[in-house]
Length: 125
Image (cartoon, rainbow, N blue to C red; front, side):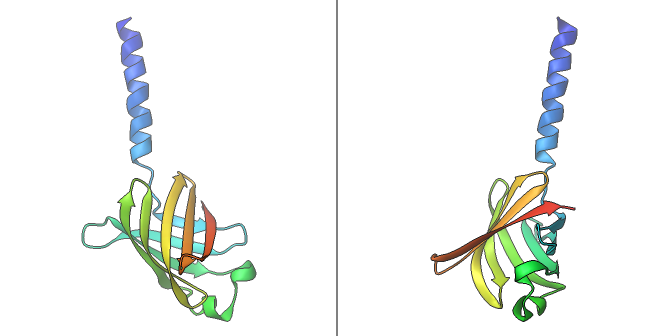
C-alpha cells in the first residue's frame, strides 16, 4: 500500500512539474509558414517579446515584410498562460493577447477598436 501511495504521489508531482514548465518561449510557425520567436523580457522576465522571423501566405505584404527580424509585440502577464500588450500587424498597432493553449500551441489575437479582430495560431517548431 505504501509503495502504491509513493508511486501515485510521484506521478502527480511529475504531472505538476510538467504543467509548470510549459512556457511560450521558443520558435513558432503558423500553417502558412509565418515564423515568430518568443522570449521572456522586461525587468523581471514576466513580459513576453515577440520577434517576427518570416512572413508567408496572405500575410506576406510589404507592410508586414517591413517588420521581419523586428519586435512586433511586447506583452505583460495578466493570467496563467496569458499575456496582453500591443501587437503590430499590417503596419498598424492593435491591442493583442497571447495565450498559450498547450505546450505546442499559442494564439495571438489582435483587435483594432474592439471591432476588427483576428486570431493567429502558431505551433512550436
